[in-house]
Image 1 (spheres, rainbow, N blue to C red):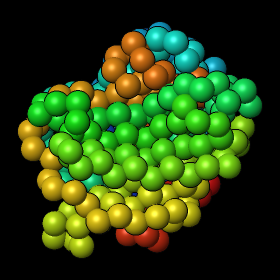
Image 2 (image 1 turned 60 degrees about the vertical axis):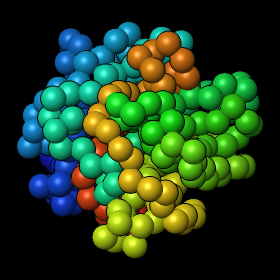
Image 3 (image 1 turned 30 degrees about the vertical axis):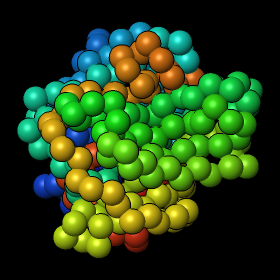
Image 4 (image 1 turned 120 degrees about the horizontal axis):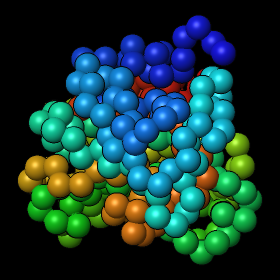
Length: 234
């Protein structure tokens, strides 16, 4: 086991702007520790803690693909999240190669506002074979970028960066440190935080991830391309 975890390195990246930093390396209980300055734990349901080992030697939980989830709609998250200017990073590893062809949308994360289901951003494995999807939706404007021919059974990292109206107003998508595409951002999301999930679309009732998940971090600022690439490497 390393002296410093991968999450320690990531936390050093614009640490004061981190809204939530979940190592997902908990070994008991249902409280999922938030390693950010907010220290506002998420709540797990159903997941098997410490079922695998992440790339830095820390434990990683299993999501069963059926009804497991982590709820991170915490007080601190609601008070600090910025839907116009943010970076979200999630790590996943499917339980087996067949997951990539199971015709099921499986979420690594979904975060939405109080305005409704059409104001959200998400990172997911799609219902199409061998592909992952980045999405930001603001009312009738939906930005979706899909990366196909992807069927890794190793750990993979997805990062979405929204630069905000003051930073070029773009949405940028990174898979394993590679900038896959850039879009012009739609309007600012109205409303406040309504739901925030790791490993599920809506509290474990739909689109549950099937496999293990590693560190998850959300910033209320945009990381640079170099920073987004850096946090994807270990």
